[in-house]
Structure formats: C-alpha cells, structure tokens
Length: 90
Image (cartoon, rainbow, N blue to C red; front, side, top):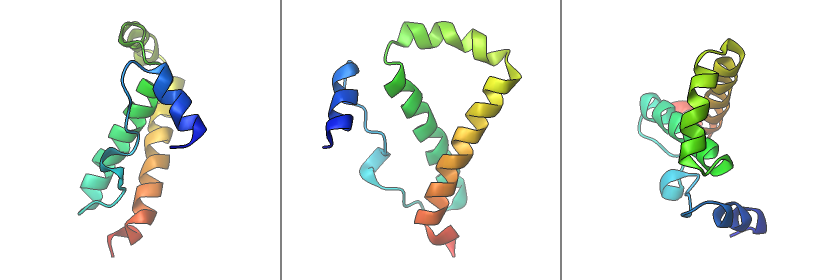
C-alpha cells in the first residue's frame, strides 16, 4: 500500500477500499456506471470519514446546483476510467 493510501486509511475509522474488488472490470456499461457512482461515493467517505458531518452537508449540496454538477462530473470521470479499462465493452 502506498504511503498516501496508508495515511488515508489511518484517517478513517475503518479502511476503505477505494476500488471495490480491486478491479475496474465490469460485465456491462450499466455495471460500469454503478461502479463509477460507488467509487465517487467512496472518495467522499474517504475525504470526510465522519458520517455525521457528511449527513449534515447533504442538505447543503442538495440545494446547490454547482455542487450537484460537480458530483456528476466526478462520476463521469470515474466512468470514463472504467470504460477505458473495459475497452468500452467492445
């Protein structure tokens, strides 16, 4: 594990696996999209490990269009990476 990953894990209450199953390979594009959403959520959890704080902040970003767009962009970036790893399901 890298020093950065180790420090991220120490900050969280429990280690977080940022790539579920340690693989980006999925059977279908839909599965890839679901993995992208999961990975985006995991990075938020790793960045802010306090569940109470995350819950409190939901009300803030739920009403902020720019923040919602940023979340969508994060998922799109994750999906682009997953798509490339799967050779675009060709």
